[in-house]
Image 1 (tube, chains in turn red, blue):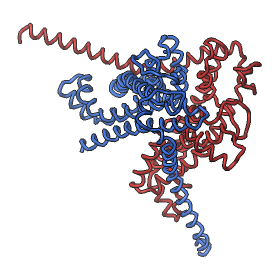
Image 2 (cartoon, chains in turn cyan, green):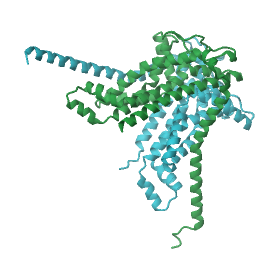
Image 3 (tube, each protein chain N blue to C red):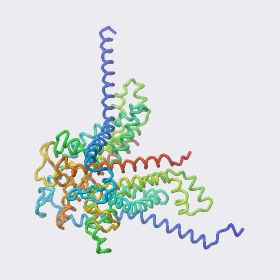
Image 4 (cartoon, rainbow over the protein chains, first blue to last red):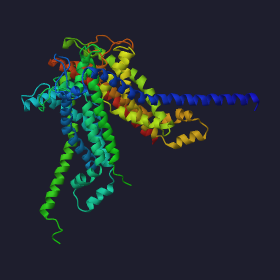
Length: 306
Length: 291
């Protein structure tokens, strides 16, 4: 090989190494973006909330019982919104958790692989339906049904929104629980059958307790989804922030409030405008804590089978 | 001995309980199918009479019989194309870095935590972020591009997680064979790892995009308009989208508009169905090729 050829080869190798490093750097920047987004969310929420809390004391915000930010006399107590959200969360848990867990038990303990092949895709389709469609369903189908049963039901009410949010989180509960139940080794089931347990006893006293961490985690993650759910509650639950325990009344959740403010034309920089950031920050904190708790439970209490 | 043996009555009771439990679980599982069918039938029953070519060709109107979803359909198309253009390259690149390059380090675990966290952030919070970041700071206004950037951030974690799974499924022997023949790491990824993971990445990406097409709350936050009687001509134009139009119709009190919403829902669900079918076909094909 001549000197020239060697030189060329060396140079080519050098540019290639440089290219390799450049590509790696570029890929790294893309990966870094997720940290940037997280920081950006926290920064945006913190900055605007900070200005908000300069005019409204934190204490009044967190423990006030009247929420009238757009009407005189203005009052910024977030409890009515929080109670609205909690009502939806509680109601959706009542629907989503039992049906989800029962479906998971059916799928993992009873169903043949053919039935699994039908039910699993149905759950995926249910999970993929946009929330605005569920909102429509609540308003035009479930609410009229409720009014047949209880005529005093308001057109906008927490109950019908809770029911559709429950349907919405159901696939998540079912699929996470199904994964957890199927991870329980068969030897445990066989041991229980060997001492004479029925199928139900095996499922409820052996398999579910053995998979408890995954089951609990699925509940927590589903609740966190319900907290952040927006469109169905905006459409079906109403826009009247109030402290009530009656699910047939119109309420307002934190998410629905944010949507309603941004639908109107509230000028930027006013306290009214900043409320969406304060409420958004509270929403972000609640879901963050719930998600972290969910993943912790999943990891901490996982039974380890060899 | 008789103390150990179970009385026939007790055994009978336990067996009956077990049968009842089994039936209950089965019924609740099939209830999901019933719910889905009821939902679809209800929307079809309400919306079908309104669903015709005119509905697809007309702009929204105050008069229900003249209203259509042309601007929403085009808006959604614009939105989803731009979102795909932003989020797929970045998401796949991030997944490649995390699966192929990253060593265990502090920054690496920080990225992992961020992605897990971002996947659980409510979509409306992304709307607040988009409103501040894109609409105000970058002064993009209430444009398609602002909406697409917001949506991209929203589905980025989904794309990253799905792509990482696809990359992880590629056997290590392929990487080792490539580097044994003298390929650099990027050459290995570009020519061998990515092609084998492509179908998995595509499937995950299509599902992520189908989530973006149905998302409403972030678009309302960034101020996607509800009355748009034109088709966006460029990325800086104002726009509306299918779910926004549906929301607008649902939130009116008149019965006719609710039926229009149902017709809009049928269009939206059809689009989603087509995207899901595409994902299923891609998955099926790649499985057949592997055998």
